[in-house]
Each structure stands twice: as C-alpha cells, then as structure tokens.
Image (tube, rainbow, N blue to C red):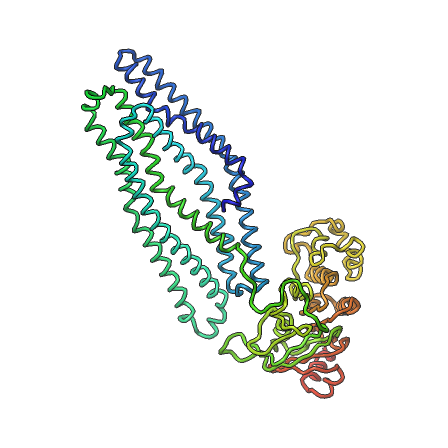
Amino acid sequence: MVGQLRPARADLLRLALGSVLAGAPAFFSGLAVSRAVDAGFLAGDPATGVLWLAGLALLGVAGAYVAQALLPVMARVAEPLRDRLVTLVIGAGLARAVAEETARDGAGAVAVQATEHVEAVRRLVVALLRTTFSTTVTMVLAIAGLATLVPVVTLAVLPFLLLGGALWLAVLRRLIRRQRHLLLAGERLGETSRQVLAAARDVEACGAREQALRPAVAAVEATAAAAAGVNRLGWWRSVVPMLTVQAPVLVLLLLAPWLSRTLGLTSGDLVGAVVYLVHGLAPAVGFMVSGGAGWLVQLGLAGERLAAATSAGPGRAGRAPGGTAPVGPPDLRATGLTFAYSARAAPVLADVALTVPAGTHLAVVGPSGAGKSTLAALLTGLRHPLAGQVTLAGTRLDRWPPDLLRRVVAVVPQESYVFAGTVRENLAYLRPEATTAELADAVRRFGLTPVVARFGGLAGELPPGGGGLSAGERQRIALARTWLSPASVVVLDEATCHLDPVAEEVAEAEMRRRGGTLIVVAHRISSALRADLVTLVADGQVRIGTHDQLLAQHERYADLVGYWQQG
C-alpha cells in the first residue's frame, strides 16, 4: 500500500505542510484567549480582548481556506491510487487464472477485491487525508500550545494522555483482529453467493434449493456474528475521551485555586488551558476513537487483503519450467478422457481416445448437446478431465507453461470478443508486433475491408463490446486476429456460425493455408466435407475417420449428413 503512494510523494508533502498551516488556530487558540482575558477583559480594556479574539477568528478563516484548497491535492492522491490498485488486482487475478493457481470459483473473491476493497481503500484514504491527518496535526499543535502557555498543566495532563493512549492501542489491537475476521467473512459471503447464483438453474432443476442455501445462510450468519463482535468493542469510545480530556479538565478546575496561589497562574492561563483541552484536544480525541480508529483499521486490513491478492504465488507443481517449449512433434493426443460436470452427474465424455497429428484439419460434429465444445475445451486445456489426459508434443497440457500454451493454442469461441480500442489493437491483440502490411493482408483475407473503412482505418476506434458491429463482423475480426497469431493449434468452436456458408468456407480455407493444426467444431456439416478427419461426438463416445469412412460405418453420422442435405 505504501509503495502505491510513492508516486504521490510531492502531493503528500503539500498536504502535510498545508495541514500544519490549517491547524495553526489550534496552536494559537489558548494563547489568544489567555491574552484576551488577562490583557483585555480583566484589565478593563475590552477593545484589546476583542482584537485578540478577532485575530483568532481571522486565523480560523485562513485555516479553513487552506483546508479547502487542499481538496484537489487529496483527489490527486486518491484517484490514481484507485486506478493503480484496480490494475494490480485484476492483473494478478488474471495471472492466477491463467496459471491455474486459483480455481474458476475464485473469481468471486477477485471481484470483491477489485470493487469493494479497492473502493474502500480509496474512500478511506480520502477520509484519512481530509480528517484524520488534520485531526492528528490539530492534536499535536494543541498540546504544543498548552506546553507553551502553561508547561506545568501539560505535565499534569500528560499521565491522563498516556493512560488514554495505552487503552486506545490495546483496544485497537483487538479491533484489528475482529475487523480482519469480519473482512474475511465478507469475502466468503461474496464467494458463496456468487457460486449459488451461478448455479441457480441447476439448483432449481435438481430441487436442491435447501442444500444450496445452507452454505449461503451459514456465511450470512458468520458475517453477522463477526459484525457483532466488532460492535461489542464500542464501549471504549466513551472511556478514552473521559480519561484523556474530561478527567484533566476536572482536575484542572479542582486545582485552579492552588495553581493560582502557589504557581501564580492567571485566570487567562487557566481559561487558555481549558480552551486547549476542550476545543483543541477533545474534538481530536473524540474523532480518533469514534471514526479515525475504525478508518485506520479498515484501511490496514483492506490493504493487507489487496497485498495478498496482488502477490504472485508459486506456479502449479509439475509444470515444465516457464517459457521452455516441450520437445517433440506437436501431435495432440487424448487418452482415457472422461469428463462430467460433477462427480454425481453422468459423464459427458467417457474413456475417449483421440489423436490429431500435427498439421491435421479436423472437424468435430455431432448432435446439439453431445459434448463437442466440451471436447474442444478439454483438448485445449480450458477444462480438466476427471480421468485421462491430453498431451501436446508429448507433454501433458497441465505441465506446459501457461503463457506458452496460450501462444501455441488459440481458441475462437462462438461469441467473439471485441474490446474498446482501435481496429489495429483488436487485430494485433495476439501478435502486437504485426506489421501494417500483415494486418492489411488479414483484413483482406477475412472480408473486413468494408468494416475497417467504416471505422476510419486501422486507427479507428471500436466501441466497447464491438458496438456497431454485427455478430458476423465480430467473428471476422476474431478470425483475423487468430490468423495473425503465432498459434500452431487453432480451434474454431462454432466460430463461423454467424457467417454465410461461402464466407465460412473462405475462413476455414484461410485458416488451413496458414499452416498448423486446425480443429473446427462444425456449425454446418459442410465443414466435415473439407476436413482431413472427422470426429463424431455422440452418447459420450467419439468416432474418428474420414468423411467417407464415417458415412459408411456409422448410422448417426449418415443421419446428420442426410438431415443437412435435406435442409
């Protein structure tokens, strides 16, 4: 957290100096009132007393003006801090997801950290800079003013300040522990809620509402108990001001006659001392125990959670060392592959054996819901089998360095991803070093020339989510992006479903000409006619062969072809 504030060092220094200037009335308040009483009102010269008080009022106005002028400086500290923290949290979450250090279900915790925790840090930093920082300065200046006016009273007050401070620190430690417990309970509640809501359709279909709600209710109860534990420490908010301020004022009033007779303190000295305690120290202490302490605790814990979220963890055991490509022919092979969406569900795929030699054009066909996309996800490492394994170049996918695997294997889904940015950035996303000539070639090959012209060329800006683009145009951009990528294995998971048959054939032909392995999860059976090999997925099993072989040997495949020809 401290490291993220380093870029704002100059603004923090300005805030410190400005807070001292804004807090000047706290230092001069008791002195001014003392002079107004002794040299003015009690001396029979009310004009002098009024002048001293007027000077103090003007100083207060100047301090308020300085405090107001510091608000833009605070914004320059807090807003960039939020942006940096969001970038760190999202980047770390994506890195862990790619490295598979966190299960997909961990996305809920990342969302809580990137929204609630980061926003809490921003809000707390602003609050601390605006109030706690200035309040601390005011407290110090009030004590300094009291020591300047009547040092002996300061010595008498000091034990009470130390006792109150010791109690404050002792309770603060317990508060930190309980707030940490509350913060973790909130994260667990957010993650549990996300899991339950994500599975709502399955829960209703299985009639498992009670079982699904049980962990959510437990998380709510745990959060409520943690919040109650924090609230039970509220008693100290009245005890600390009583010890630190009210007790010294009472002692000062009781000892006032003795102090006047023995030490020669004037009425102005005593009134000035009370002003320091009541108007300088009391508000500062009251704020620190009621608001400032809680803010400090929350900021520390939120920063602690964000630091843990953004720290890089070790890679998954058993992987090849980062960045080194496994040696061997880049054949894709599945053996004994079994997958189900839960341990109790029927397998979507069972004991699948499949070999895709390097450079092969494979089409995956089958009835809707048979598991074609699931097979593609397993072959590319996006899902993990319950049994069996998938190897690429003789090495299991989970042992490939994640960043290298994503450079070697590219998957184009049915719903194409187009982000807010230039046309160039979208096309070159998987290969940033692509030249303008290469980009223009990809644009031409995938029929994007009118689209690029419509947005003003490669430098034209695309709206978020590809607004203004048709579904087919978004698919063309995703296909061109993948064609430019360095991937040697490309999987098109119904990635041409929004294109007409002619455009689909052109896109598959361009992908084939680029070289490497091409796997097409077919939207139309015509894709199978163009492939070297065809995989039929049906009833949890796969059959592989050429189009003619499957047509002759498997009735299910013949039926699919027949339906397509009739349509």
